[in-house]
Length: 210
Image 1 (tube, rainbow, N blue to C red):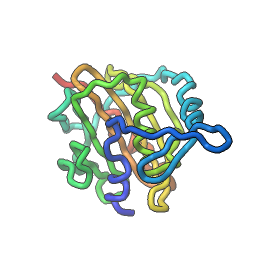
Image 2 (cartoon, rainbow, N blue to C red; image 1 turned 30 degrees about the vertical axis):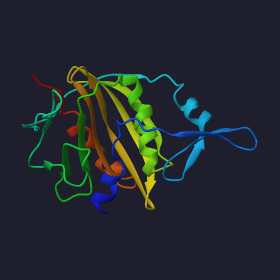
Image 3 (cartoon, one colour; image 1 turned 90 degrees about the vertical axis):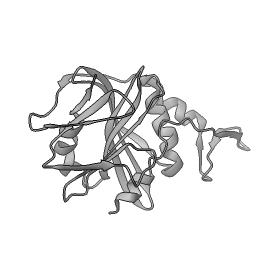
């Protein structure tokens, strides 16, 4: 599994892209994407109609997460265990600020931050809309709001297929007046269950910093 494949799948997740609308010969309204794919417009509407639940649990950073990786764009950081995770300024994905990897494993992470504030309620639809430019079958598997170290985030698990590989994104989405952040972990769908604990530990290091 190549890291670059997954990094390319989620470029520009918070940038609202324009689509063309068309009507089929039987009267169905569809959305046309630049990559030649399409989907029914009413399918998107039905996906956004469900109320997102809030998890009553409070999520906190792991005691072994001793290193604070700070964003230079938005007032957030991530506490992580440097003996388990390697990180660097993003190279494979120009939209990301940092890239991370569970050492010696096929679990990766990205922090994508921008200074534009976007209502948290809209982040799910934007993630799906732009993610489907690369993976048209991208769909929501899990979603809920969580309180992580005192901050409200949107948790999403998104599954899709890219270049024949079934991948999954498991991460947090956050917005405040200082900007918007996508902090995700990602791997193949077949490996996710073995990495769930690692995903949760690093994701729950998400904090707001001064």
